[in-house]
Length: 273
Image (cartoon, rainbow, N blue to C red; front, side, top):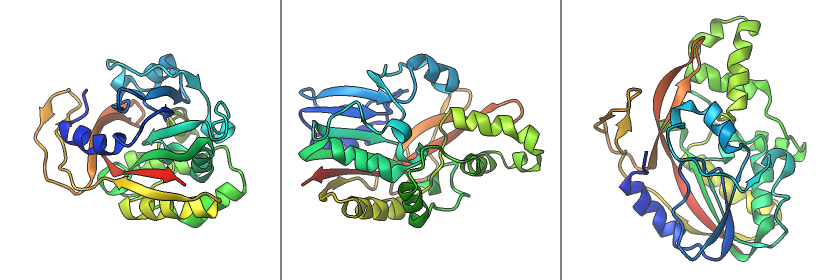
């Protein structure tokens, strides 16, 4: 399932800023289309075999084999030396992590002065996260100060209830497999819209002792064609002001079935000073 042309054009303006040696975290089936002169190492929490097992909805697509397998919440980016990279690409990753602020401090730690952090985060208003409350910065800051490394069950319960409200009626014992499945897949634990993720990304660098400035951010493209559970494309319903990616995930029920959602979000590129 190729990325839509509108999104490719939009992101290329940001990716054109990148050069030298860097990493992409969580490329899975949609690696960034980086300039040909870049040297990129792929990092993920899952091996390719694990990803195919946990994400059958994209199992037929070509997956990007990770060069380095690590858990950012537990290990940070300890496979990479301080000030060793020219860029870090992290698209639709922060929302899955137990400690997004620590992850960002690791991103800025490994960047050289003048290095770029290219980040994309989905806007909850246009995903299955729509009924969920936005994660407050105070919660994220507390998790950072407490050095949290594992997402609590409450985050996954919130996700599961948004995707399949019927799970609310299940007993704790019957609901447990749904929570475990969400945990294995590293589903969304934190939720933002475009305004609050922008605020978050402006707050974190100075609070954590880094100087960074915004070089590029994306906005205003149309929703691309969706893909139904049968694999057939259908026409977009309406335009929107945010970037869009098509994706499919299973709906969590007693017998999981597939559902469709659009992934919209803000795409930004920061340069370390």
